[in-house]
Length: 308
Image 1 (cartoon, rainbow, N blue to C red):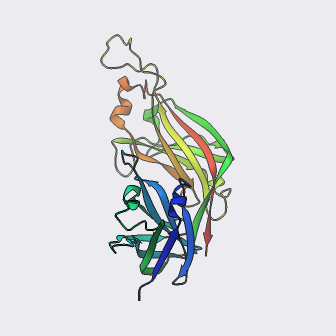
Image 2: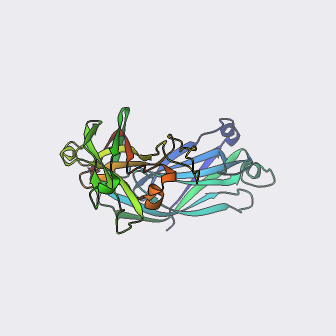
Image 3: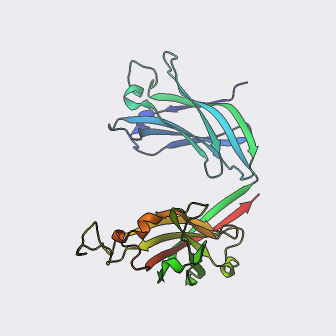
């Protein structure tokens, strides 16, 4: 048995006059509530021309986080005169966070409105979808919701290291500092991590005493900029007189946007900067054994898990 839904729209030219946007209709089939949408003035993504197309979209509504839908569906536009329909088969996994399966640019409007073809007949079109395969797959019922705050807390901390060679191994920690109501430290692995001794590793760590402050069931979303400052004493190239100096505003940095939880209290990068480049005097990172590492921290909001 086939499971097909056909939608005939009379007065389609009036729909085109509405311009951008979609027209939607809902139906129930196989115990699921669906929504079929027509985009009559769509544009092909990445195309250099501005030719308009008609697209279709199928949405699965009111899904529960305890399962996902693995589907195979066929979209079609009826040729009402010759029976030469346009069809496109797609596979899509529906989740509560991914309810829409769109088929962009099914047919150019120029083709759709061609009077010698039968797609637009007596100012009406017929579109539809066939549900070929529908499979409910349990997915443990966990949904994570991120709440981004309007008023964000931010700040920065500079860690001045007087003698890089005397740092503890395999890692060293800065003094604790507080930003956004949480206590943090910068972690530096002078000889890298995971047995890669050719790189410096940098991380932002949440202090253990702040873990209990994390929102229940999940954690806090943070944007971090980790950087090693360049010092103005650094000499560029092979200038023997040292008259050319490194721009003090240049630096090596990375941006990390991540969620700190009781299980993941440290985020950063293991291959932050090659140790050879860091120690080269001409680069200005390490001057007479000193360097400055900075962490800019912005608390974006919280995340919370919801289980079924």
